[in-house]
Image 1 (cartoon, rainbow, N blue to C red):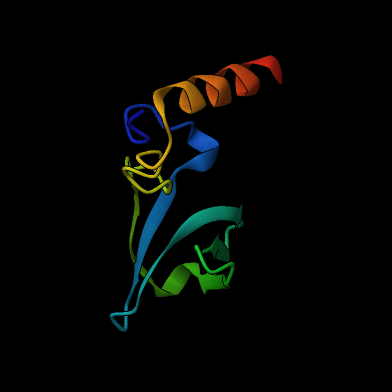
Image 2 (image 1 turned 135 degrees about the vertical axis):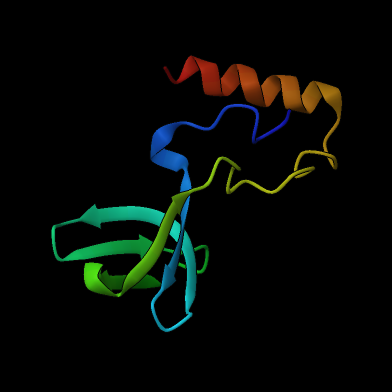
Length: 88
């Protein structure tokens, strides 16, 4: 299982660099003409004024860490995937 092979749009993170050099990475949870709101992996909310954004770049990598399933057996992973598919 490779988390970054295919990442649904709603789970993609974005990288934002502000005009004063601050870097923020997180999922975009709200956008207006005035602000962009990100939530990072520590559940911190960053509300950034559009005028302060120097760069806004969607990331193609998954927020799920690589090798997170390495501690599980092949059967456990198959069971997990089967369970998740049953939720559709």
